[in-house]
Amino acid sequence: MISEKKATRSQKKGAKEILRLGLKALPYRRDLLPQDEVEALDSSTTKLQESLSSKFVSGRDLEEKAMAVDEALQKSGGLYYHKKGWVENVEMLLVAAIVVIGIRSFFLQPFIIPTNSMYPSFYGMQPHVYEADEEAPNFAQRAIDKLLLGASHYKLEAQNSGNLYLLMQEGGRTHRQVTSTFPDGRFFLIPTVVNEYVFEIGGKEHLLQVPAEFDLNELLARKFAGVDDLRNLPLIIPQDQGYTGRRMKLSDRPLKKDEVALAFDILLGDALFVDRFTYNFVKPKAGDPAVFRTGEIDSFNYEQGTFPGDPHPIPRIGEDKYYIKRLVGEPGDELNFDVPSKFYSSEYTNNQNFGRLFIKGDPGILSRNGKPITGCEAFDENRVFVESLIQDPNAISKHGFPGYRAEGLLSNGEKVKIPTRDSPDNKTGQNAYFAMGDNSTNSLDGRSWGFVPEKSIVGRALLVYYPFTKRWGFSK
Image (tube, rainbow, N blue to C red):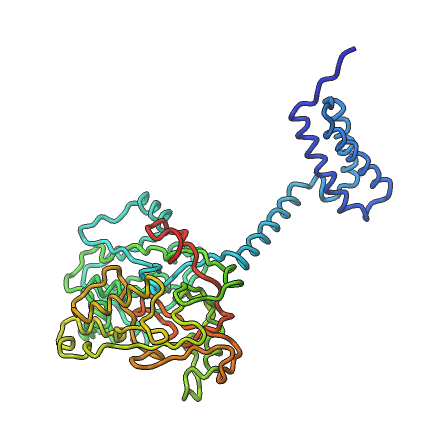
């Protein structure tokens, strides 16, 4: 008598796959099939399951029982057999989508910082300008920079010889917003709103488009005049050329044809994960870098009466976006700014740095409940820099924090009481928070638009996961 060979591993693998499909089809199809087909599928899958669970099963026996399940499935499997491929792929994609949506809604949400209002804690879009003696990156280098830093390369090349001008747009603006599409809009594959700048070289217009969130004005001012504000450059109306609009002269040195007038990279702002889970159990606190929706901020503050004397309120934000700022005050806190009187002395007003220091608000000490605010690095660094300015008007911030600035609701000497849901004058029934940017010289924040209602806060900045720089890691 010849003993039968034991089933091989591949035979068992194939039988398990058929069994899986049989067990899957049976509950979905049971109430749609004739009784005899249900019994045939049920019986064949049971027998195959028993064979696979036994310690010894011959290859021939396993194949016979697998074929019985296969025959039953061909009659009664419907979409689950033989069309299993696309059906299962669709199911897998749906399950994956549900998991991703669930994670994003309740646990972690990705967020990219577009502006530099939280600099240097978090970076928005940052430029790297190539000087005349610096070689621009080749294609391979640009590809590496794109992968590691999210960098995009831009270049303004002279098509004619002549001086470099920036043409001013309606209302004295330096640029116009347009919708850019592929291929004319470089690599904007999806229609995207961008800022379009129009330059003139030798009588010919040159267009340059950059992301709407990127401040090209500051780059041009520093590159061509060594100043922070483009408005400090002269406006010229050359009547001899018949040009009726205004234009700004950027360089006294004439450019040659094919010469690169400006080359720079725009580095992607920090991409981070927002922790949406913790605030379900723990209240936000001062010092947290918080992400919130802005859609209800205007209505909340007008209902609360944050800006008295506004008979016809104008939206101060006017958009529903995600913002990231640092919470500087909790419900019930009192905030105030103290600008040292020394800053208005002749020692400062006669100093060449006076305009640089005060053009974007008066530097001062931010206090919370009567004491200088503490509790995180940004609070300490901004305070330390203002204290150093008191001693030396030429002081430079060691870590890039520019010092908090007194403006708007938090002007010098003003006190702000943050409403709680139990406050007698609270008309909204909500707790509120006060938020400011770490870079308050370049931040549209609570000083301008008021309080953040508690329900608008999405979560806390948790982890910078891209680009791969020294800021990669957990947020502070």
